[in-house]
Amino acid sequence: MDGLTFLQSAAKAKPRPIYVLHGDEHFLKRRVTAALRKLVLGADDDGFGLSYRDGTSANWAEIHEELETLPFLSSRRLVVIERADPFVTRERPRLEKYFAKPSKTGVLVLDVQSWPANTKLAKLLPETATIVCTALEMRKLPEWCVQWCAAQHGKALSASAARLLVDLIGADMGRLDQEMAKLAVYAGSNTRIDTADVDQLISRGRIENTWTIFDLIGAGQTGEALLLLDRLLDQGEEPLRLLGAFSLQLRRLAQAARLHSQGESASAALERAGVPPFGRKSAEQQLRHLGRPRLDRIYDWLLETDLGLKGSSQLPPRTLLERLVVQLARKR
Image (cartoon, rainbow, N blue to C red; front, side, top):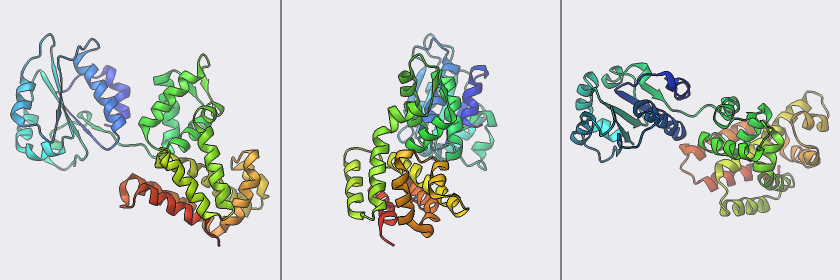
């Protein structure tokens, strides 16, 4: 079962003796674990029936004893094993026996990265007990933000504001939730959060820095652009968030270039691509500087950098961003 689907139906579900949470989206895992705690222990849970264990050091005898021991002032006990992959590897035979005949009062939650569906252990669990917690695709995140903001923060987030938010923050669902919480407070009595709110609260400083870097890129000033990038990183800007700001401008430029090649004037193409009026003159210079061959490779470079920042490359994040800036700023 998908993690978001589980969260939508958790209030009406019945507790199961075993759950497996697998995937790499820690925000979803935290949310699902919180929902399971409420489901298993009730809304008035005082913490006596809850136990967290580290899978790197947990042993089966202690876990099994906890699961079979009825907690004080509670009808069930919830045992959550975090980082449970090594625990599953060590205790697989015992877990197979337990999955076949679990405790009647204890609920076991295994938080793992990997859960191959072809193993005997996985086949012993029903689909409703196997909860997939993986990040949404980038293209699906704006729609999720709109739904999540309404359900969790009580505000109507416009579609355009959601797209800008994702462009600025990236695919980290936890960070997106934090920013939506800030936006909800910032909106106050207003029931709607629009692009101007995201721009004012979240993006103003980052967009200004991004425009400065792209002005330097458009002028072919590679060294100066790298110096500004390094300064932002030294000040604590997160690489993925910087890439999100870069992506916003680069995608606009790539779209404008495509429209221009179809016969639209440069200014009209930049307007349709979403470049604000104050930035169109600079953007025209950036288009001329980059040229069609580089503009055609923008999406490939962005994807390569994004995947690298998320672990597919052994290069440091700073080096990956510097490489992108050099690719863009060097003179033809």
